[in-house]
Amino acid sequence: MHGNFNAFLAAPIADVTLTGADHLVWYQSGETTRRAFCGTCGSRVLKEVSNAGRWLLSAGLIDGPTGKRIIRNLWEQSKPDWYDLPAVAM
Image (cartoon, rainbow, N blue to C red; front, side, top):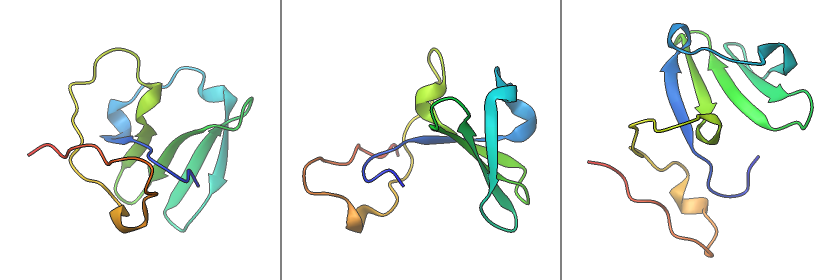
């Protein structure tokens, strides 16, 4: 999907306010998951995990400081050799 590093923030759905939500295009990607894309440019915006009640938001969309740190790197074994993974917070 991305081919390289991409960061997401997990948050309860009730804790997130979207602006421009009417511009999202939704795709049902699994029984309990769906993904939202920008209807203008096609960029991935979020993934909804309905049975967990949370959204995984593309971190680059958040304005201002988040106070969040990387806690896990996924699929490390298949990363390209041309960059290093970010450090994981302890």
